[in-house]
Length: 105
Image 1 (tube, rainbow, N blue to C red):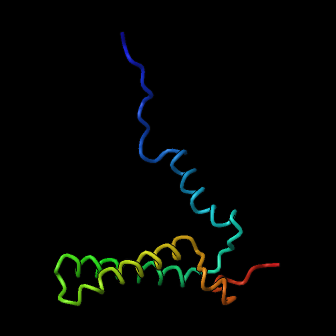
Image 2 (image 1 turned 90 degrees about the vertical axis):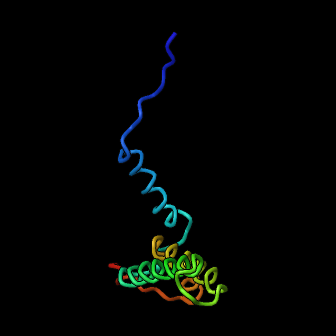
Image 3 (image 1 turned 45 degrees about the vertical axis):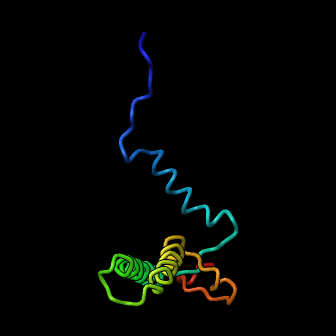
């Protein structure tokens, strides 16, 4: 007796693209309007990546900085990457700041 299984799909399929678009668009459907512009996003993602790498370097002993900086930089990296990837910053929303390009009316 042969067991039937579904064939494996390649890594990039329409389903994968659909999931990615759902993650990105979930910010828009929950009422959170994008308030982080393109330049701001690039800076946040770059700084987040650098902070994450420095945090890992401290954790692994490659940098001789105080160990307490590792989790602090790790959390900062996660916040910067999350706000950069979702184009939404909660602090900007509270302060009324919007760095997105001017919206056409």
